[in-house]
Image (tube, rainbow, N blue to C red; front, side, top):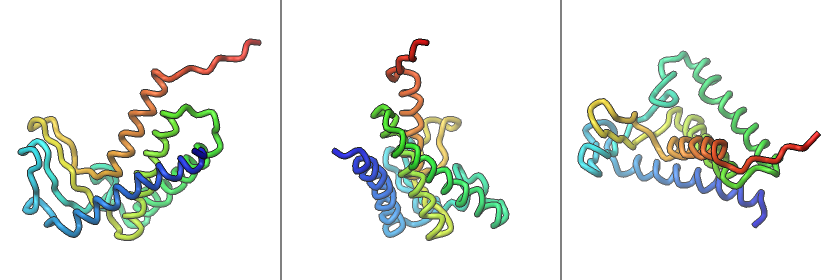
Length: 166
């Protein structure tokens, strides 16, 4: 398969899965704790919240100008750079390429929400114990996190390029 087509399809797949899941949540669930759905008891729940901030709501209390800069403009610039990087860097290993595509797809999906809705739809919640639990997150967040873990794995265990002898 053509490399650029592979990149495009993987990014679009990440965006599509996220956006489809958010449409399902917005059309079938009740927002907030009163609409929570226990998938696996209290360990894995669906709780629909709208997040005006970034990860775990950080930045939701910023003034609108700062929120525009830090949650829309800067992420868009970073995403455009990462797209440029993965398209131009032909010697990326497959795991790193997939990881970057997951990060970009998840990032675009959340930026899209901020542009269209002014906030991001979150709905997954995991709680192992009272002190071991996640914030409420979405498929895009999962894509970005998975991509970051894959990048770390690739960096730690990936094939090392042979250095040119002097």
